[in-house]
Image (cartoon, rainbow, N blue to C red; front, side):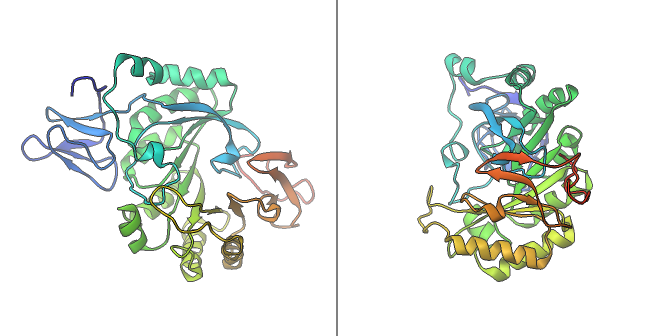
Length: 343
């Protein structure tokens, strides 16, 4: 392991012999000496589990919060986004595959000096940016949970927010540990099909559902995104079941985003037809979801936020930014109804 940056990981236990069992995500990989887990960033070195990406932020810059996408959480603010390498899912259609599916290289001193940050340094970077908070995004934040937790704790102490953009494939304990320092999550529910998760993501659906349901119980603001892929997860009966689960298990006010797929990584299906996104959004509204949006394509009808009582626009958006936030402390300026809690 010479030349590799190692930080002792949390969430693991000893297994038979020199092997270790990682407890961070539902894969619960049993890892032999000098081997890595499925995520590619947690390794067994001399019988101890280490993180290879603690503090290894290969991207860090300001984004609009709408890019995450989080539409009902501090609309119009900027968030400082950190991303690293690796992922615990292997989605063949991944649209961030250049970092999420990349192995962690053996790093030299120059690489470390360029990308390595201690939590205090990362937090100071957020403060200096003038952003309203920090986002753990681009690759899967779960797999550098320790760094996200340690940095978010500092960021939160100064009154700023912290958000996860995640696939939701994590175990309950890590989520409970970071919950006091985590304000919002956008969970990418890939599909409502167990077969889809098994075949195309090398994962399972049920743990993702469990994460979403636990986030609600923990008081974390939650929004759901589904990337609708042509002839793959665009069946309206399946989308209906997804929306019914959101309504019944997460609540009808849970924000639902449908994003347009474009060919990337190993997938060559054609881009999602706009009419498919419209059908999905209309299905979600028919099922009873209050707030439904369409992403990766411009459609003002499913871009603005509306008051559910008087149906008037309360947040007017352009692509990934807010043009006019008309809310008054989260309430509709026209009828006074509550629209957003995190305004």
